[in-house]
Length: 431
Image: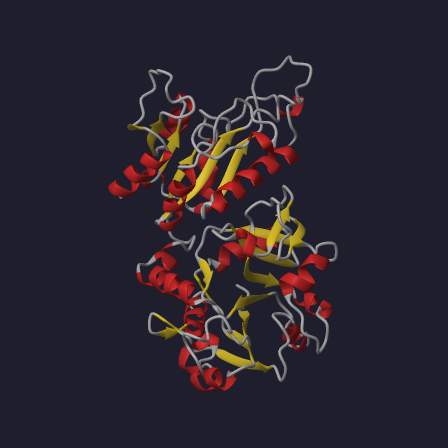
């Protein structure tokens, strides 16, 4: 385990100061402890032994409370910002002090991330910089990340975003694993921000990768967010979402369940999310379940659109769901189709595979990736193959009447309901 972390705790916290005047932002209480204490306790328990804390405005409060860290059996060192240096500027002074990869954590966030899993990803990719990414319910108020099929980051879209753009809901979650050579590219004695000033220029300079996680991380920079974070901490959601613990998932088919099925959607203009789907998925987001879409997309194998266009289709779906305050935690698609012989088909995708429903391959892959307990999970679909897929994977199944759900079948689900909204209500009542 890489055992050094830098906590960025020098901000003024102007948005939350009205509710907590005179208190350093990282010292604002969450469940009767300073948020900074939650960070230190969470990650020292996972093997972090040395913390560098950047301090500025009201930084004496932090020093007086935490001292040198002996109370928590750790070493704490302080980087004092005589003038505000942004999220990145103060880290340049560490270039002579660090020889191994180190963690960067924002001091106004509550989280519980499995450091081991993120570290393993960083090493597997031979990355120089790994960013934790996730979807959220306010993506266009966030820095957004684009990456390729290998998870290598290709573009960082810093906020504010131009009107009308549609990016995938993939948000920089403000939790990083960095190699020390990164520090040499931070300007000296200059205020700079990772998301705004540095990351957009570093995509062609460093091996930057996106690590998707469904784990809990949220900033409490506004009073209403602090209340949400405190509630999540008290009800156990923060700790239970750590991927070292078994997760519960709701798997969802796409066409005919989330959006109108116009048959082989091949352009983003054909994507139209049902008005009842957003609120239903938002209820999942608020629950202890993670939401995972698994969808057959033979439009790729058929040559009707390429994977870049499919990405645009899913970005349109993300935008429509985001406008309703909802998001999908992760999405798997199968590009294959077993039948060949058509002139426009893409031969490399015309294969019999283990991921195309009714095969359970996508569910099983998600279970491995996110440590999902399938016996406590569900599948919502509109077709017999969705139900067969869920049954083969060992999850409970619900068939909706939207999409192809009106077609009679000998394949029987555990439950039949009107639509995804009723399906989610049923699941949450039975939980």
